[in-house]
Image 1 (cartoon, rainbow, N blue to C red):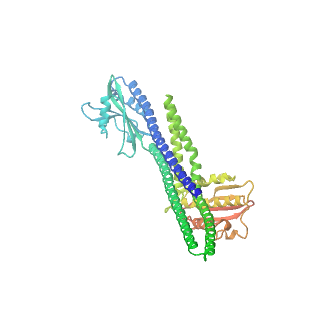
Image 2 (tube, one colour; image 1 turned 60 degrees about the vertical axis):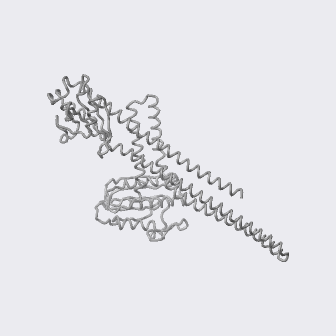
Image 3 (cartoon, helix red, strand yellow; image 1 turned 60 degrees about the horizontal axis):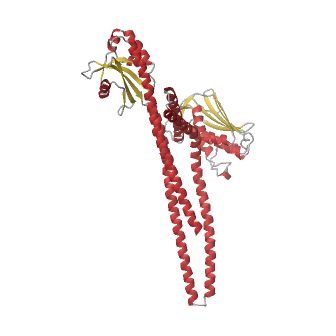
Length: 516
């Protein structure tokens, strides 16, 4: 009984530790997310402040009167400065232009310079401009200080930065830089995806905590009921012994039998409970382990890199050693790592989606996504992976169905190599063209398929893995997918070292592929 009580406490303590550990990890991620967003914003502002300083100095050095008169009187000067501004325009900084006020008493603004790369879309000199944030432009004229504001209603723009050009203590023009929302959105989307994943883990921990508490309560209640029943039986037997000596021996035998039976039941229940726990645990670990191990292998390096880069930025900033070039470089590194995480998430999320329409794809992309799922498993088992990808042509098909077929073939090769304990095992993936046909070939050195089985390998419910719970539907469904959905052929043969599976597709959209 004491051991049972100890077990209840241990389960409760473990569940509490898991729940609070998850909460701590999530809170640390939330703070890190805020730090990344803040650093990203500051690095952009610092960099664009330097750019606008350079543009301002260029305009001041090139004009010997007021900016407006100099540009009006010298068209060549105006075009040269616009070419210089054009250099700073990238996907990140979409628009850079210079405005001034026609009259300080009114709110009529006009273009002096426009860095738009497409001449057909470039604004004309002195073309009137009605800004969406006149209040902010007037504020720059009034305070003579730069400012920025975020866009809430314009989908393509993130931030607009305003920099005054001051000559003789007077604002003669304002440099306007519009930031693209695309790069910012990629970082925010990746961080939000990570946030969602951690929330799922948090919810799972909470549910696990509740389930453990419920099971502990029910188990304790059941033990208490059994103890009460046992005491009641003892009391009844005692009464019978006192009332009559005639049934004394029988009562004693019943008591002993009950004790023996109870002990036997307890032992059997304990054994069954242990078996049930093992089965449930194995099932849960198998399902969670496959997903988490795949994601963990893909995320471990970029997450570590993001953490290291963020710490480097924070440390350099605190020590006052954070120069602009370092900040830009580290921020770009974070973007690269975040984009890698985003691609991994998309690969796992999209892998089993059912595509109702054909899409343009190619063998290299299909192989890349499939290896994202299984490559770590293959290499961890000491299997060498060889890729000879010579066919880069695009074609129209159902990418996710082709991925599932390719994944099934690779898993079969992996199973054969491990089951047969092949020395120096390898799996080779080849792609090549033969006329109009595009072929992807998967071969291994696992000894091949037995001659009596090779003609039945694609039959429904035929499997060589019966002892390993093989259903015999994997290759049958793979052949159906290739022939019925993808207008292709899936064939198998043996070479000198092992089995060779070939997926043959035709580049033309509607032509069916004929076997050689």
